Length: 141
Image (tube, rainbow, N blue to C red; front, top):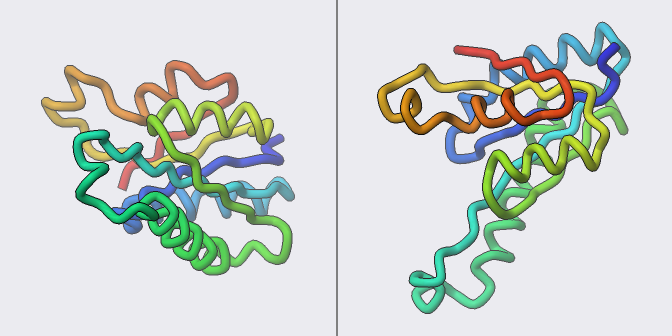
């Protein structure tokens, strides 16, 4: 049923993604599916551009790619069953765009505990749930 599973990974808090990764691996193994990991880098604010090295975005991308390579190996799905991508932009917009581009059947993502800030403003998981064209599973710690 779920052959293409997208899992957003926040590399600033890798432990947050662990429950979602474990769930996605379980589903992928049961269904014979593949997992695509995604990390979204924020855009560097124009105000900070003069204070960071000229290749700052490229450095950030390389670091994220290296980290996702490690995560993909650690989930242990086997050769060719886990891939990854690093995108840059708005977090939930890029997750939704990647889900469309890779034709995901399911997005599995972790969520923080609901707080006052996310209650009024909405969370990334909330936006993804509302606007995704595929099923979304939100896993809490």
